[in-house]
Amino acid sequence: MLKHKNVYLFPVLVLLFLSLVTTASTTMTTADARSTGNIQHLTVYIHAIDTSSGKTTLTGDEIEWYEGAAADAVFAEREPESAAEIGGAPDGYYIVNDSDSLNTYTVAPDAKVTMQIYDHTGNLEDLDVNWNEALTLEQFIHEFAKTDVFDLSQSPYHLTIKDGQIVSIVQQYTP
Image (cartoon, rainbow, N blue to C red; front, side):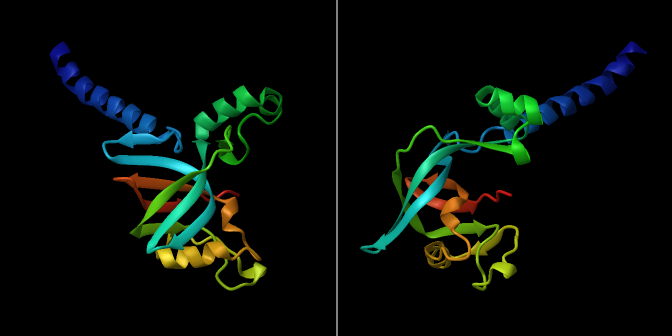
């Protein structure tokens, strides 16, 4: 009988382990400049996009982006009085930007751009979230230049860099 119970216990332990691994991998900071082989992930505030000499560059200020429990922990460490008062990171995220240094990155011509919110019509009352909306790089450059209704430089962006070029730009929605 004991052997029979262990047969059921093993799959449960395996599932528990896989669940913990998956949870741990999804709660990492997004902007800790993780690297996997020739792919790097980081989060920035974009200060400028320049297209000249047939190539596009993006100048950004790298930040650390935390969500969930990781955000609560960093918030409590950096702002203990506020954390004690409100209990956790406001809106479930926390941004750390300890450096004002800017870095310039080359953008691949076929980089994928994913937006959450931007000015579609020029009217503030039409501004609404459209989750994971794909734009071409050219559309993004055009929209980034518009600042009268919604200034896209105020949003953080998750970048994927492969072989030294940005291949993906994903706007992070912040409430």
